[in-house]
Every structure is written in C-alpha cells, then in structure tokens.
Amino acid sequence: MTEFEQIVFGRSAIPALLITVLMLIAIPVGAFLWWRRTHKAQTKLGWLVAGAVGFLLSARVLELGVHYFCIVSDNPVSRFLNGNTAAFVVYGALMAGIFEECGRHIVLKYALKQDRTRENAVLYGIGHGGVEILAVLLPALISYLVIAVLFTQTDVKTALRSLQITEETASAALPAVQAAAAFDYGMMALNVVERLLTMLVHVGLTVIVYYGVVKEKKGYLPAAIALHALTDLFAALYQRGVAPLWSVEVWAALCTAVIWILAGRLYRTMQPPRDAEGAL
Image (tube, rainbow, N blue to C red; front, top):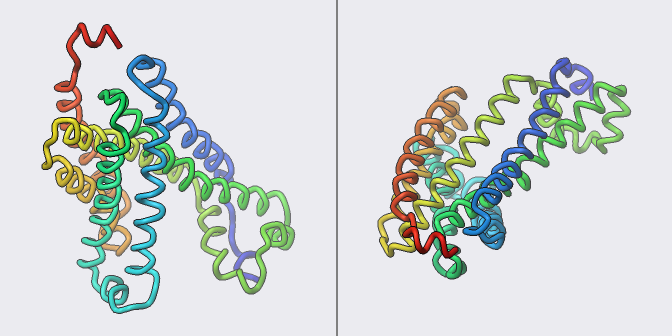
C-alpha cells in the first residue's frame, strides 16, 4: 500500500489535533458549567438532556435516514440531487433546518411543559449543540489524533496493522489518514471557531423557537427554519465546490450575529417580573 508510505505528516499535526480535541471538549462543558453556575435556580438539568436527545433523534436518526435515501443510495432522487448543484444546495441548506428546528419545536412544546424559563431554553440549546460536538465531531478528531500518533511514532506497516487497515479497506481508510496528515494550526483555528459559532447558533435558535412556543406564535418556527437554512447555505455551496472555505466561516459569523440579535431581543422580552424572579 504505497499510497500510505507517501503521506507526510506535518510537525504540527499532533499538537494541533490535541489542542483541537481539548478545545472542543471545553466549549460545551464550559458553556454548561458557566450557565448552570450563574442560573442554577432557574435551570433544570433535564432540559440539557432533552436538548441532547432532541438533536440525536432529529439529526442523527431521522435526518440521516432521509440523507441515506436522497444522497447515498442509488435512486432517481439521489441521482437528481447529486447531479444538480442548485437542487443539492437547496436540499442541503433546508434539511438540517427542517429536522432540527421541528425537532426542537416538538420537544419544547410537548415534552418540556414544566419549568419553562428562558434560562432553561438556553440550557436546552447548550445540550443540543454540545452533544453534536461530543458525539459527532469529537470521535472523528480523536481518530485523526490516533492516526497521527501511530504514523509518526511507528513505521507505516505497524501503523496500518494497529489501525486494522488491509488491502480491502485501504481505499476507504486513505482519506482519513490524509486528513490527519494535513491537519495543522489553521485547521485547528477553523474547527474551534466553527464550533463556537455553531454552539451560539443552536442557543439562539432554541430561544427563538422557545419564544414561539410559550407565546403561541406560529411564525417563529418557520423563521427559525429559514435562519438555520441560511446559515447552512454556504456550507452546501462549499460541498459542491462553488464557494471557498473562508466564505463559509464569514457567512456563518454574519448569520450568527443576526440570530443572536433577534434571540437576544426575544430573551429580554421574556424577563420575569422582579417578584416572580425572586421567588424562583
């Protein structure tokens, strides 16, 4: 498997991956500890768990099932979407918004009828965004770190044997090894900033959906879906090679700012009266 022997790992690969792993753990854990410490009386841990479960069910079960049919498997729908850039971009931008925001709405409206506070809405958003980091992204980065350590501290044959990469699985494993080798401090910064923005988006969108639920205003769910879709627009364009990577982060930062301005205004309008606040 000479293609693996030709891969060169940069000196920054291991430290950059290690710092990224630690930072990605720190983002959700730090957000939870800080919010819980400053709003203990107004928050319940069940809302954090509900946010995590809501994400897993909506994004990792239902949405992935649709993705498998529409993108991965071979059928007329997948052939149309994969062969049409505009359709793929629209599909890619809308799916996460539809599944995650509808899932958020259902859980907030029907499962979380007790302890409805604006502070718990933020905690739900932390659980939603936190589990995406810890359960979805972190395992991949840890695997890259393991790959980098094995390939730099042992010979190629030993590394391949330790990773159980055979002739049959080599083509599937090659992209992961190449990604680990190419990881540097720039990728570290990109991953950390992207996760920070995503966490803020999840919190902001949760507040928007929560406001629509408690105030019984139906327009806030489609607004959250649209904002989520707009945020993912450039990511879908990047996947099709239409937009550069830097534009994805710039666009995400702009969308995050818009979401937080709106969510901040709604959050302030939900401030309880002083006597009620003191009774919590």
